[in-house]
Each structure stands twice: as C-alpha cells, then as structure tokens.
Length: 162
Image (cartoon, rainbow, N blue to C red; front, side, top):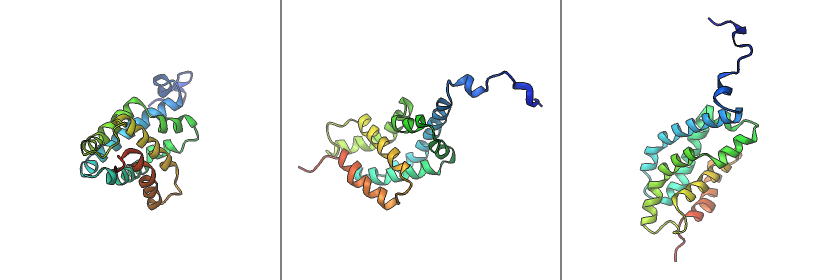
C-alpha cells in the first residue's frame, strides 16, 4: 500500500496527461457522449419521419445525457470552458452525432424534406447547439422543450412546402 506522502512533489496523473482541468473534463465528456450515442442508436433507427426524429430524438438525447450522472456533473461545473465545449464540441463529438443523425437526414434529404443548403455537418452543429441550450434550461418541461424544438429546430432544417 502506498502511503499518503508517496506522491509529494509528483504531478497527479490527470495533469500529466492533460494540460488543464478543463481538458480532463472535456475528455471525460467526450467518452460519455460516445456511450450516449451507442445507447441512442437503436431509438434513432426506429424513426421514419425527420420532424418526429428532430423532436422525439432530441428529447431522448437530452434525457440520456441528463441521466448520465458523470456527464451531468461535468455540465454543472462552474468552469465556462465546459459550457463552451458543450456548444463547440470536438471533432469526435461532431463525428459521433453525424453518425447518429446522418442516416435520418440522408433519408429525409432524398425525400426532399431537408433544405438543400444544409449539409449533415451543419445540421448536426445546429442540433448540438440547440441541445446544449435546452439542456441548460432545467426549468423547461418536456412539453415546453418539444414546443421549442418544433418551432425552431424543425423549421431550421426541414424544407418548407412550396
């Protein structure tokens, strides 16, 4: 067994692997997002309508994210770099979300339901931003969040009727 003083003068492992506390939190958040994406994959495969997917899939994504105690703890940190990460994400977080949302967006695009000017990467960036904003609004009920998603997220991505 290692005594209390064994690491005096040694940097903790986390600070040797990561330059800052924020970098550690972001790395852990990315791992948790990857686990959440795996949990959501089957639910997303069951959606056959893009409008329904944008609302119900978003709500499900937020429930999965909030139910992850580690990810929730990270999001509750007072460090603004964590807030920025939740909005900005990372290339890996973007890739995970494009993998999750891409098939739905591709199908809807083939059906003429997604605006031509919005590629999957851009749509996912907007979806991620909306999710981050709604996740911070703990005062919103599921009904209120669904209303916001229908009024703003769906209308931003779907092709308006001609």
